[in-house]
Image (cartoon, rainbow, N blue to C red; front, side, top):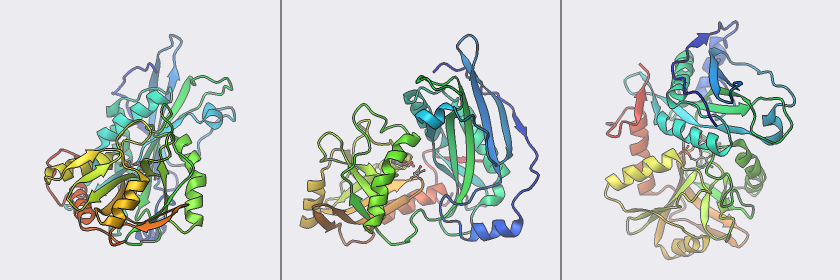
Length: 370
Ligand code: PLP
Ligand code: COI
């Protein structure tokens, strides 16, 4: 949607009347979990369509985190015109703070915006918003191993209008949540359930990070949990045969001959930034990585024959997580040893070391805040 590309927007700082008491914050940071606790601040930026049909971003604020007022007819509440991103800020080895590939999140945000008929947000403004929030909430980094500050930029349609068309006003917000492990169980490898529901069809919104995709994944995910698994895995909608992705992570299959396969970006899965980073790191190690369709039958057969030795899921929230067991209506099978695989561990360690400033950043992925 047409938008003026104002990258020079000035942020107004709103005073915080009641920040979280230090002892409560310390308690949260010692045991952050995932997604249940929030920092003190948020960024809000408004967009409105002007009389000439060209809209613009205005009124950028960084202020106290709190409820937002919405008209009950706001378009997001009726037609789910909403998109979001997920990225993390990491405490660096030298004590500084840094983001990981925020420009990739900014670019994906705009691809999601285009699919959902929402206005583009200049990438520089996306990144500046995130930086503003991390600076304001720099006391919100967890003390735990693997901890980070999870950042959630999102955009909602705010116009009060019940006709079905793109809204004429939007809010962009960024909130932050101190994060530890995504998986509660802390198990060395996760168990996944092959759903009979599908997540995305060709031509749909599978490649966009829009709330509606996640709403539709809740029943299959709840089914996975009820059956004692950690996550759901989706098959393709057309043939119900090819592995797509988990509810919130991409997948990699690791073979005994040292090759890796990950499902291709055909429009029905999210183009994960972790997926892309792993691909680059693995290729640099001389490993062959193929973006290729891989079926549930192949997965089962190759696990039984020993051709496939590891499978891992990857994403910002879950980082790199080994998959040990797969279960569906046709029975279950174990992947490799059922626990974390060697290559999975090595790739995870390399990625995490770059993110935390413990290894050289040859790709320019790390964006420091100081
Ligand atoms: N797939 C889905 C459905 C996701 O929600 C996510 C998480 O953002 C991913 C994959 C992994 O993407 P990324 O590595 O960019 O976090
Ligand atoms: C992320 O990894 O950032 C996501 O958005 C996934 C979500 C399931 C938490």
